[in-house]
Image 1 (cartoon, rainbow, N blue to C red):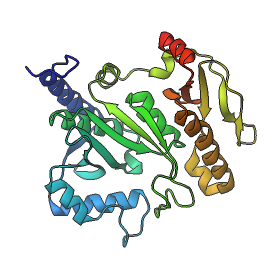
Image 2: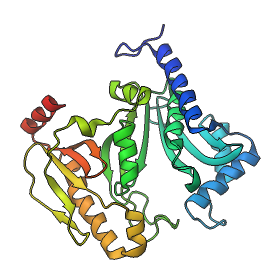
Image 3: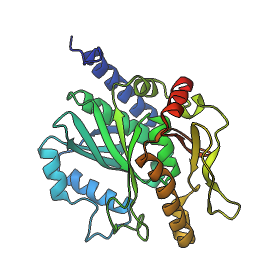
Length: 302
């Protein structure tokens, strides 16, 4: 029996993760598997470009790069619904060498997003990683996209570890065009107790284990603009707009205001030692103050 430094039975964890992944795929009605054949990699490249509305001449990921990543043992997976490719994910090994995986991109077609396909995909990725002695997966996401923040932090139990201003620079796809590419870097500790619990039986989430009343340091004014407040107490809410993608398309200056406000408030707090401890779908990020005494109070609540 193989055990991790914290005493976890790794062999049992691998079997359990594989079972969870199979169950999640069945529940979503999909087949999720690795992809190696060139014609399927071509389909992945086309799908990802379509999801991000990129021109065919500048694909999101080229077939050549997908082929190289697949051939060298990295994670290239497709999601199939009734034999049709509806999603894909690509991840590569990251430092420390071969004990961490960085999930670079994951996309699901619009007509398949309401079937818990994304959740099934992450369970497949987790089982794949654990079977290769990889205990951590990292990825980035736009901190202003509310549904992704809820999914990553509230549902999967990933921990945000760094705020990255304009991480990719100017992006050429139509989803991100006209905005700066701020990202939150998250770590998914695949054997952490809260992650295991979330994967075995997705809970209401960390956000519901925190005090119901949490004062905002950033909320939404009646006109839709970001509104700042002073910080009071060990916990605070940092709100994000309900639909930043629609806001970018309809009210670009307001979307920019939100980008800069969240960067300043959330990014500034994290740079000063504060940490995100949850996400409430109707409110936003729940952030613990950096003050050591405040953090002790939060840990007692936690």
